[in-house]
Length: 411
Image (cartoon, rainbow, N blue to C red; front, top):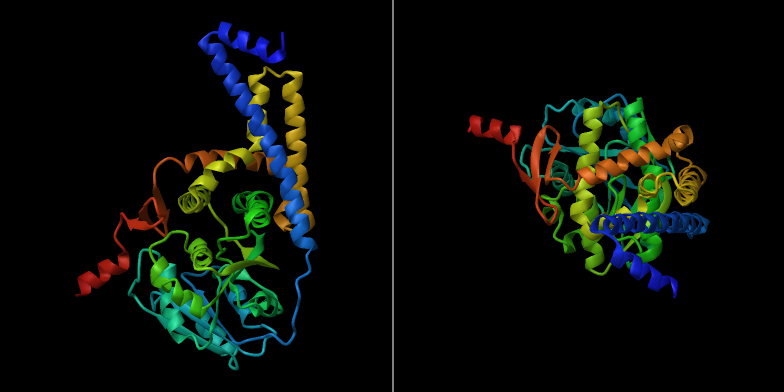
């Protein structure tokens, strides 16, 4: 009698409870094995990406309009914004988009204009909102003052070096490229934000590199998006993404649908994260995860195959601490830590990964719980407002915009 025949007889003679147990054990085993394969491929994808030395043309430096949407300030705001004013680049302008003229960030902008008098710095303010996403509204107003065809969008919590512009625009020497985006390292304050940021170099960015290796990148990340004005207009301008939560995803996805390439730059940006409470961190991570789920539902569901830390631990518990369970756990965790070290520390040089590498398993457990929680409901909180997320990833306001209330009262 063959092994498969014995297994069939065993299943036939088993109770429904035993069959369920076999299914659970088999599923957890396969999920752990798939995670091991994923970790190995992530190491390969990272090594291939960082081994590549892109061509650098010192004579390619077309003029660039930098659009910076800002709202509020913290202790790092001036330094982050000033780093864009100190670029070793012949011709560029910076336009800050602010919604409220009384926003405290206006003081920072005025100081920048005073400190860099030879740089073309402009600011737009408007209480009018283009859609539910106020950041996109700020961008839509800022672009009206853009003088150049190349537009660079960057969040206000980004800090760069003086060679940033020269490096990130290089892929656009190819006319087939419509968008360039960047990887990043996290600079954090406080243990809550630091633990949150640990997932970026050890979990999220390895996934980006895997996606890039398998199918090419078809999205963008808000830390930096360089897009041709003609491409932006072709996809419908900022109005086309004004109601999306994941606006950065759309600025990469829509151009690929129009036939343009998105390129992942080798330049590493510093993402400066402020102090956060536990509640703020959970809200921010949940909003981010729900946005990804809405943007790439099947890919997001498929993340279950990458959560090897948890599935191997559950397999160990389900087997009652068997030798097989310990073997699967040992191999899975070894590969997981190897991937986190190689991508997060060796390739990205991320300071958070270097500091808290030993907490990767704990961070994985937290990520798994947040991933599961993100499937519950479609409500997100963003800047003290609540929204319902539609199936397509658009925001529908559940709480009124304070600005709109003021306008209504004033009218």
